[in-house]
Amino acid sequence: MSTSPANKMRWLIRRELWEHKGMLLWTPVLIGIVMTVLGTLLTAATIANTKLKTALTVNGEPVSWSAIFNTMSFAPHRKQILETVANHYTNVAAPLFLALGFLVFFYCLGALYDDRRDRSVLFWKSLPVSDTQTVLSKVIVALLVAPLIVLATASLTALALLLALSGVLAANGIHVLGELAALPGLYLGPVRLFGLLPVYCLWALPTVGWLLMVSGWARSKVFIWAVGVPLLLAILVVWIDKLTQEQANVGWLQINVIARALLGTLPGSWYIFEPGLSPQVSATDHGAPLAQLDLLANSWSSLTLPAAWLGAAAGAAMIWVAIRLRRWREEG
Amino acid sequence: MNTELDKNSVISARALRKQYGKQAALDGVSFDIAPGRIVGLIGPNGSGKTTTLKAILGLTGFEGELSVLGRDPRLQRDALMEDVCFIADVAILPGWLKVSDAVDFVAGVHPRFDRSKAERYLALTKLSPTMKVRSMSKGMVVQLHLALVMAIDAKLLVLDEPTLGLDILYRKQFYQNLLEDYFDENKTIVITTHQIEEVEHILSDLLFIRDGRIVLAASMEEVGERYVEVMVGPQQLNAARALLPLGERSVFGKSVMLFDGVSREQLALLGELHAPSLADLFVATMKGSYQ
Image (tube, rainbow over all chains, first blue to last red; front, top):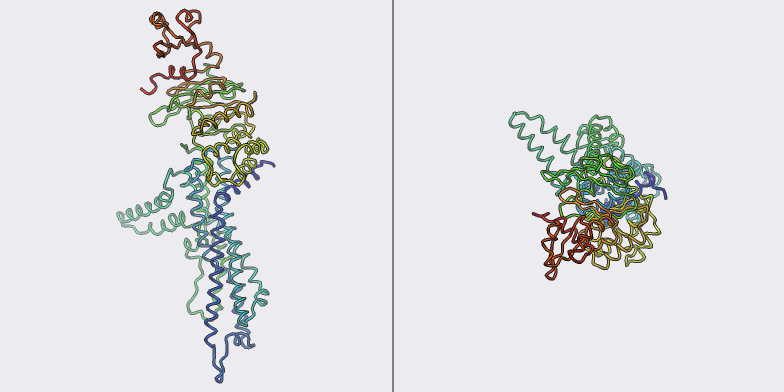
């Protein structure tokens, strides 16, 4: 087997997965399974409940929901409902994306610290792997491997929930699976999710860089350092603002430095940092078929903002520092 | 010692200096290690042993000139690690690592790793491929680490207290394997240890370090020629002391004195001659280290 740089990188990534299998793989899979089971039970219970109540009473005859749903006159609504479901079903995976934010955060926090704490760093350093390769393998796991695992789990969970919903409906006389399967949105949903990955990488880079830097530097209490330093900075600025009677700095700093150092690993964090990105949904727009926020295009448009690239550059610089720390920080 | 680095040496060090705060860990360390030698770097705690090894392995910065296999470990560490292997005294394998994964990983990243050799070593132990480091005894972890390291065809092997915490059976076995299966004339081994008596018979060269300086650098043959121990009878005590012994201790009422570079003919007149043990030589050389 060759020991080319590409091959070494493959082994380094595999090494990360061995170490963090529970965190990076089993946590999302478990959340996905729990969501699927709970979702299915909840759907079944809700529909069972609804069935008890009749939708309408026509001439003293009770009419069930399924009867209404299957009538011709309901067809346009039916189509609209199904399309909305097909286009948005991946949103049910939101808990997994929230989990991704935490997974990547804590993965980075331990990435360059854990093996210094248990002193196995000297074993890894005895092998012909450069510190640059080691740190970059951790960046790749944080920004690509972990999100890809979560994206795959999220897609499967959303599909499983959709199938469960169709199954429960079918058991109640409403057959929608065939129609859903014919809708392009069903297949585009996961593709759109994966299409967000490059945007995620860029916006997460500053947080990943900051955490890796602290992880490579701190001798103990990484979490305190990683979170405490930005918070102290915030307090300091508030204090300076009070002294100088200026108010402008706090908000800017909170969003552009503190939040970006700590919250970047949350998918969609760009909407926190750039509130202007989310399109204005007018409350009076009742006619619109469920405000169609094109998440993919909208998110990609965030890359036209200089803040995205400035943050990414800061993140890359902090990763460079992390590499230097890995090389020269003395152990033992 | 000349100030030019010796290109024929595996390790050539000139005036290495390293400060930790006010304390000088290395205070002008210079030495050469030729290929095919087994060198004991021996000194009391805090003498600069580990710092010297860290400098050789590119794990610490320092002042001075150092060449390891023709490379500067500060600048060319990545390339160096293909030819150098080390077991640090504190190096521990991580608890989550499985035996088979460890072998796969080293095989994947190390061009000089011989997988079948590692598997042969492992077959001699109680380790099974699915075992995790977490569930191993200290001795088993060291066995795994050694199996991995000894399967690497490195030009330089650095061992910092390799047998620390192991029982006598493991320690004997380790040095035996090291000599019989690993060492050959193309390899160089540097060992630090406090268990001097265990390495005494496998070393070819000796480096004594004290307070950040090399106080003795000699081959074992030279040591045998230079240092003589004499059992001095009570009548000869004054005559013997006049020859300025390095050290003096009493055994069963007789004085045992250690001499450096005094002719054997002269010493034979004083009493019975012995070759000193390394431990005694060490004690005599390091006298007053902790004062």
